[in-house]
Length: 293
Image 1 (cartoon, rainbow, N blue to C red):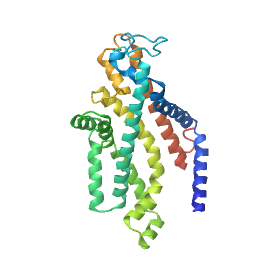
Image 2: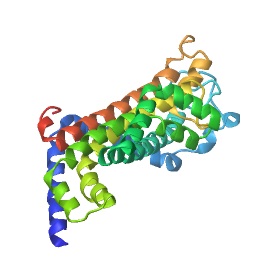
Image 3: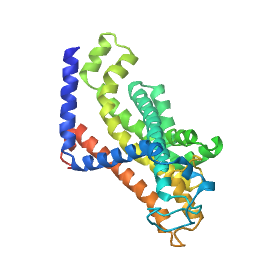
């Protein structure tokens, strides 16, 4: 047991040392930490009553000022307050839908790569079907059928965006199962569950980790797009703010702050997740080390 812990600590130390060399990844991680900390502290540092349109104290579409650093919306609410509370919804949907997508994609990919014959063929045809269909349109239809709500948006994004991950994991699973020690495990009587969980999963885990960060970025963009198209979660989010600015003609009326604030937040967080994902990919894949520095 001590040998295993020593190896894990050494592997983690190597990972941390290599990640520190990825400057872009460090910048991305710093942005993400700041965003997550602000989202978690929002209920402690702000008053949720300010989100109530009946208690708004500002003028409608007021430009940035000392009282409202990011201006106000069409109801007189602080855009800064909306950005802070919207970060909780956008990040939650991004993380949870990416987790759901990666879980489905990993299970389907490993199963399709491990099993042979008709089982693999059926799994891959299902994957191909989800690949061919436009995921955004399918998510929009699913959200419309299931109704509004944060959990609905998470489910809609998660179950429509796993197909590319499954393809990627299947290719890696086929590569792992071609190694000699897998044949030795089968010869010693190892079953399907043992091989998939003890041998295949640990070898594809780095790929899953790197792809998850990229999937979170895609999920945040998808949530913003769905909210802009009208399939919102019912709570204030960055995408919902963009939808509100569009409905009230913020861009055409000169209320640039209403559009710029949530737009920059989406761009910053998506860029941060992308930088982290590229850095993780470079660290975990020796052939790519040095490419993202």
